[in-house]
Amino acid sequence: MNPLLIHTLRQAVGPAHVLTPDDPDTDLVAWEQDWRRRARGRALAVVRPASTAEVAAVVKACAAANVSIVPQGGNTGLVVGSVPDDSGTQVVLSLTRMQAIRALDGDNLTITVEAGCVLQTVQEAADRAGFLFPLSLAAEGSCTLGGNLATNAGGTQVVRYGNARELCLGLEVVTAQGEVWHGLSGLRKDNTGYDLRDLFIGSEGTLGIITAATMKLYPRPAAQLTAWAAVPNLEAAVALLGLAHGHLGAGLTGFEVMGRFALGLVARHMPQLRVPFIDQADIPYGVLLENSDSESEAHARAQFERLLETAFEQGLVSDAVVAENLQQAHGLWHIRESIPLAQAEEGLNIKHDISLPVSRIPAFCADTDALLAREIPGVRLVNFGHLGDGNLHYNVQAPAEGDPKAFLAEHETRVNHLVFDQVLQFGGSISAEHGIGSLKAATLPHYKDPVALALMRTLKQALDPHNLLNPGRVLSAPPP
Image 1 (spheres, rainbow, N blue to C red):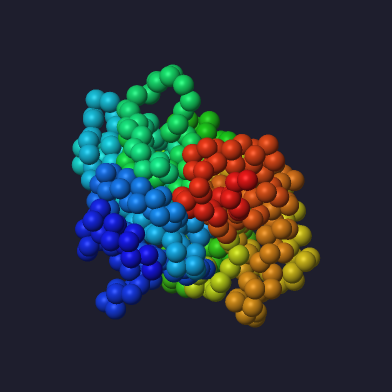
Image 2: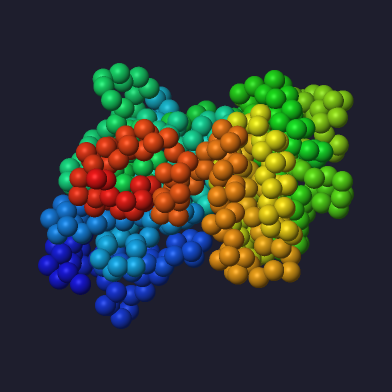
């Protein structure tokens, strides 16, 4: 315990918003344990500021006391990047009280939002004003925009709108020294030097603390249709993607691929969800497509029908269904988003969030599937993800009769090396949208260009010389 620091923090944000483990009425598990329950740390305190000025005051107080800070949004990350270590010396800075939507500029197509605002709240605010905020992912009901930016989150509409980085025009950031960078510009063009915004996006709170952002809005589509197609293999899925680009153009906003075993887990553990074509044993993959049209539903449906007719003629699709209404579309997307939950029901697993050139995904999966089958007989592969942007969640499940916990303990390191070596060989990345956190920090140097790593360490040293912002995340050791 650091009583002087705790006193200063309570003065900065109010006594009710500084939570400490010695309070018998306070349970810090929600802030100390990561979403996947892979790690549980111990915090010196959890501090919940309500404004950028309060964040700056907290950072200054911690810097003066030489105490490190772990910034945290909705704590929905998957790489143990937003919970404290087990030293009991770190302050968790929770941004969830900073929920304001500061401005919505319809003429400029922008919305300015504080970092603790839940993603779904941003989507709903845009929708009420007649616009679309397209960032969408399974955790949108609990993840926060600051966390989305800190990890450069992707989701289901990257194929059309890009990751969080592409949607952001400006940031407000508290530096490691407790200063505030007021960069909430809504400008599309600002060629006045280094793009500081891109330094902080994707840095996982290691270079500065994002407190607010100005994000792009888009006109709300006149129609949005969803289709589910059965494809015979990944080569056909890639060919169907090319066909969809040609038929739908910018209207193609989602293109997901799901392996049969992944869908089978949903059917097994969530029987209330009706998985299309799951009873047809000769369908190894399902594809979920979304078409957003600026004209009309009739035009969107006609586009889909022409696309699917061509795909049937070319042998790329063996069966397909187009959602008749919004409820059916939501049902199809719910199946896709339920795969991680169904996998969790099956037992602990080894998760991989990888990206590859789309053209090389079929060969990567064929080679890596065979490699894992040889090395670990009976292993099961839960392969699904955002094929439209080359991002696979290539997860590895224990053999059917095996103990998932024992499998994880015995094989995780080896499986990671096997998969990541394959990713490197095929020109990919070991992290597509989840980030590095602490889970992959020691692994990153084996797969990242050494010049790039040296530049990253230089930036960390320049912006956070005392290594007080989320230490041990992204970079495995303090800068020299």
